[in-house]
Image (cartoon, rainbow, N blue to C red; front, side, top):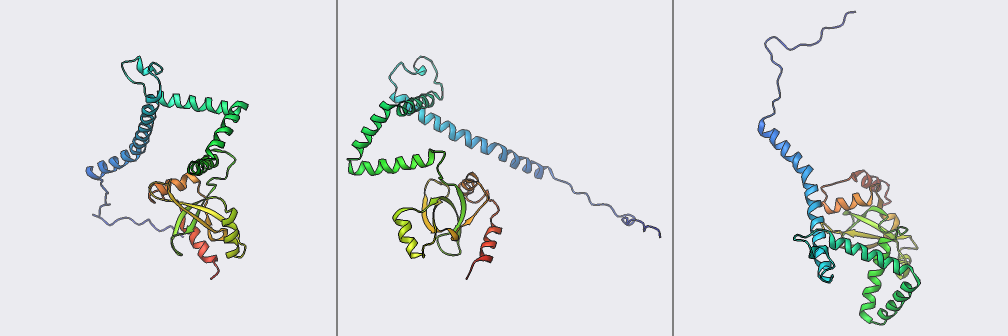
Length: 240
């Protein structure tokens, strides 16, 4: 048994050649350049504005002669930020000692007597303690939750199990079901959003990290992690 000869184009036929025009090639190079430079440029722009803002605010507080910019014909960027970091480290060192704890306790007792100020201080302090402490469960998992109505899904961040009076009242309403607190950030500013108290069985846990979830929110869905399989699996296993 002999092998059949390989098929060859008929006589006179030419193999088509795909040619990329100069305009298409330049367009591809332009997009590639934007993908490389745009994130770097935006990051540098935000960092520069942040450093300039801190330098301006801290520089206005420092007495004349305490900043190297007072002796130089040009300004050194980042001096204010460095001074702020040193100040925060010194405050942390003092707060760790007996005298620092005494002063902080005295200050908190004074603030606790001011009706409006104590509410603001307590809320801000609790937020910073939750976010900065490494052992906290702040935004520990990215989930999908139905919001603002059933059938519409959005990205949320679990901030912990629902506690206190909210958990007690909603637990009675849902037959003692376990509840979680979900923060739904807004686009493009993820620092604002909505707080939802939902049953743990009503959220879909995602494998993406919190950073990936925030990138998805900030980009308005342009940086899209795979989620469709998770929704399909949930709807398939959902009990009508």
